[in-house]
Length: 256
Image (tube, rainbow, N blue to C red):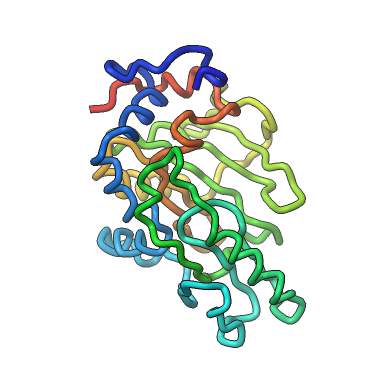
């Protein structure tokens, strides 16, 4: 935190978003977020909000990569783990997929530990799952719209595009009217078009954040529909990362 923010954390009286998150992460009740951070279990929460239509189709869930039956999967799919980030296998054409490499990558993901700084992850049993490969019509991984929500209200949108194994993701932050905010640094994209379903995504983010003091709601906007990605309660381990500016951290210091 000192390296990123150049100051000490005020645990007794948090005054900005990162201090609130880090203080909340030290408390036992923060661990209840495990059921929502789990990329498989969270589907029940999305369904409870009547938003089944934004869930990608689920093809299978497995405890080990050796259990994955690739013969049952469609020609294209995304293979992931439920408890972390990265180590995804993005398959556009199963006929060209190196199955041994795919198993190895997923097994490596299952073995990774993410709960050193984010305590709720220790309550997530690592599982592998395959789901629908989301296509936004560009032929590459879709743009990720990350709605930062405080007290059930979206405050800004962190947009990540140009994602892929051999690409450096670009980022930018916008307000809810799609005005660019000076809240992002490094790998900034100045030409992200306004998504077609922005208003609908804002309403979905509002619905999914209603029960939480803070959550980041990640969505994809495709030509024909919106897809849910994940809920995140401790972005960048609560510090918010070196790519955000002080202004984002101070966007709403009062979290009730």
